[in-house]
Amino acid sequence: MTEVTIQGELTIYEVAAMQKRLRDAVAARSAADEPVRLEVSGLGTCDGAGLQLLLALARSGREQGFAVELAGTGGGLRRLLDRQAVSDRFRFVEAGETA
Image (cartoon, rainbow, N blue to C red):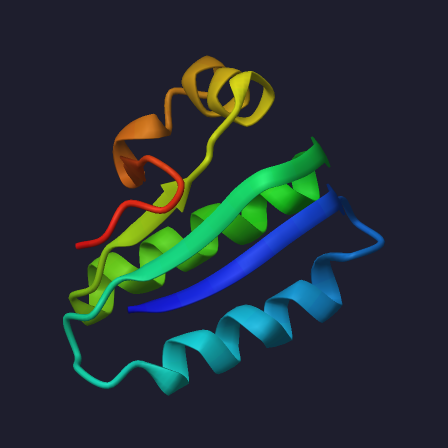
């Protein structure tokens, strides 16, 4: 499984750099159906641009046949995803959980 750790903020100011990291993670998968796991327990702020980036990754996953897992999802990000009615686009796992 390919894992990317996201810490601090995921806002309009960090999206470009994170987009490259996520693109590299997708390319580094060893199998087409291998999930991409985002370790987000250290994520503090996620704005609209950050949410769009996560949703774009989830859309790519659906189109290419891989799941996007969110590990260590705290209250803030989970509430944002629930409030926007997009939680169903991700697989939620516990931090440290193995496939």
